[in-house]
Length: 486
Image (cartoon, rainbow, N blue to C red; front, top):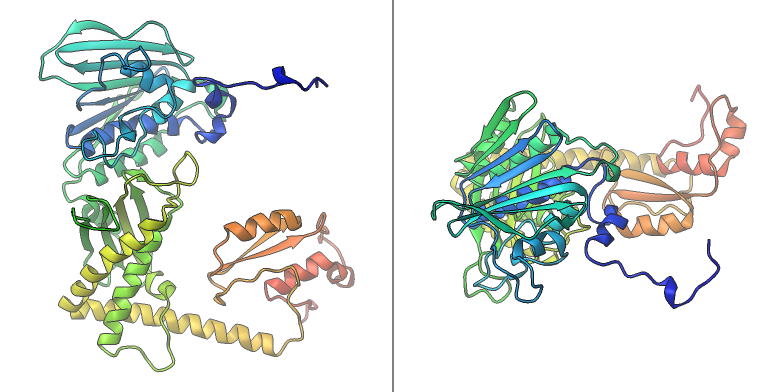
């Protein structure tokens, strides 16, 4: 390592270099699926804006993937500031594109992909990218290699004036990914979800190696998808679906913001939960999920109180009401904020109140219009509350008869439900501090440990529980020091 530290030590990363230097800041590196999904998101945005009703994705035999839409096509003129075609700007400049123009006249008000961030990342992490645009009576083509345009955008042929759209073909660069191959099962799930969120739009996946072709079209949208996912489950009530969006004269939210949802209750069996923001799957949930939870809780609690169903001494919580809910949620949020570039979790604070506000009244009305189903849903929630309270009483009884003291460094959870609570063991106080900031205080506890924990295999009892770390873990999970015969 050089000992010189002067002005020349500072390096400025330009163009796509930041992506290639730190790819993990922009995408997941397990496989190239995410950089392909960025292109799919742009095609979906054209469909969302009402300009395309068919999206075709092809997994080619050579490992490349192409995405074709029938939208308006990326503008092919010269960018007034950059001096090159808009297509080239979109694929080589970070934070550039029509998705950043959010005013009423913008091409995309609610966009999933970010033209310029998404496809620029795709270009940066690919050996080659080819873009074909059909627009204004011409077929236009450009090729990039390792992020650099081989030649300017060229018009290569004429086409019918009514023909428009964009085709992007990318060859992911294996050096950036743990597994260089596209995960076809994961891609299929993602494309199917896009079809669910775009009722009336057909999404097709072609697999060149096998000759297989699969298409999805969900005219019933979220309701049809959830019904298919829960086909083997016995539901307590029909699926409740709906959607509400903000109008022009709202002081707190922008016109068009809102959500569509499908909800189902079952007393037992598998649970399906999926949420999306502007067509982006949020696998880790986020504030829109929390808003749905709050809205459902408010409606069910209101129904229970109105019909006097709550037994004496029982108090409902949002967990009781939501524990047996399956849902698909699609939110529209202007300028959404995500946790990380992979966009797996929504962190926009306004989304919580927005979704909660939009869901509560329609659900409460539906429950009161269908009292029989409403009572079944309420009974499931009350049973969950009673079960939770019994579990808590057992824990409290055990604690009251014990002299064990909780470890001093344990940051405990607020809830006492052992079936739901989680204990995270972290190494040292520093990691403990970060974990405390990111945890859910309701059901996640943090216990920092010092040093390497004793290997307990074939260790006698006295030595085992004499170890502070082992003792603290045992007490934290409610298993007090004991003999084999206890």
